Image (cartoon, rainbow, N blue to C red; front, side, top):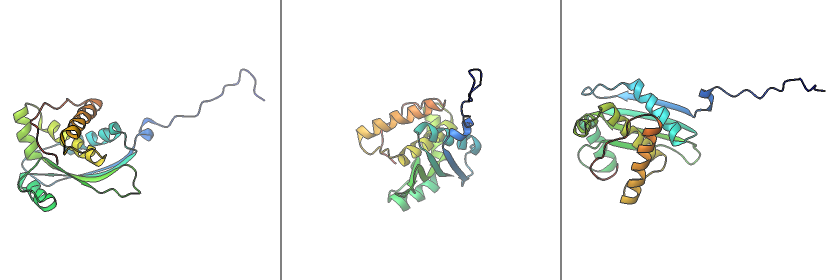
Length: 174
């Protein structure tokens, strides 16, 4: 029997890290043109997965130059020339969370960052978030969906305390 002075302990809350989604991130740098801090990008991806609300993720990122992404663009999408980012959805019907690979042209990121007046690493992070949103089911192949995806990109960047991306020309999706 408890006395009125007994203390009832609330269940312990798990540490903050235990409440975060289980996220595996592998980054391979297959280019030599642009130096990009892979640890920083890994942290961005981990925080973005949480901001998107995914229960888990297994993400592979390959950093390539324009020639490398042009090869992937041609091989997998049948389109000639470089692009900024290509996402490969590797999820299965039984998977929960995000599962896929994201190829990022850091050469394109550097070039466009200079044009837009912001840092290359922020442009590369923007590409990674774009890829994660594709893995989360977003599509940008028509104007209405593109507007929705751009709004989510900005919201995720704000949520993980990165600068909002500058306005950019409208173009096709990836």
